[in-house]
Structures are given as C-alpha cells and as structure tokens.
Length: 193
Image (cartoon, rainbow, N blue to C red; front, top):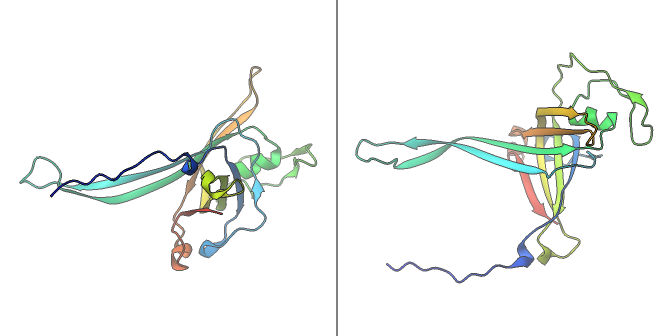
C-alpha cells in the first residue's frame, strides 16, 4: 500500500484574524438564543478559548505501550482581561446578579455595589463575536455561543499608578442537558454568518 499525500498550499483567505467582542445574556434552556445581550466592555488582553480533554488509556500485558485510549472528561474555559470596569460590568463579570446595583452604568457612572456573602449561582449565556475567514466577505463574523457559563476564576482588580485598573476572569462552560435534549450542541456552537 502506498501512502498518498495530498497537494496543499497555504490559503490566507481562510485564516481568520482580529480581536473578539464578548457578551453575556440570561441562561436560556434548550440551547435557545439569549435576548438582550450585554457587552462586557473593552479588554486589555486577548480572549482565549481553551478546551482540554482527559483520557483513559488501555494497557495490556502483551505490549510495552498503551494500545487504546478513550475520553473520560472535558473542560471548556474562556479567559480574558477587562478594563472598562463600571460597577454594572463588575457585577456582570462576577455574575453577582443577586446583589443590588445602584447606578454604576455607562449612562450614570456614580453608584454603589455591595459585595460579600452572595451564595447565588447565576448561570449565563456567553457569546463571542470575531472575524470569520476573509473568503466569506468582510461583513461575515464568527460567533461562538456558550449555553451555560459561570465565572470559575475571578482575578484581582489591579490598582497601580503605571497602568489601568483591570480584571482578568475565567468563565467555565458547562454541559447543558436541556440543549442536548433539544438536539443542540452540548456545550457551545461555533458558526460563521
């Protein structure tokens, strides 16, 4: 049997580039679209999607190496750093929606937001909008839609004279059983439109 290697060449028109915009919205069952998405603001670092898998391996006494592998776990995380930190955005980033916000919006910056002893878990939908491959046209965008996320790791807000105040945050995407039941992707979908 001869190994056949296909002809190939780099095709720049299929290489997406550019930054991303990140939005959150209310969690909606069955993989439905959230209404009234909230823009999380300007960022000081790239947005990173990390998908990691854990594997079980089959080890037989007959061989030195493993002979098979299977997936036993998966984790999906989205990390980015924000600088446009109105109180409203801090509340959304920490998903502290059970806390009462007074003012603190883009329209009314002055305000207050109490913190501490908030045990609520507020699942949210997370949407990332970025550029699609240029071959699709300049107006085409790539959308990543995560059904059910929560802020697994909140970084600290840095206060320093040499820089802007910023908050790094990591969202963990969960499997949404209702989306599976509705025939949608289990954790998120990616599409170009």
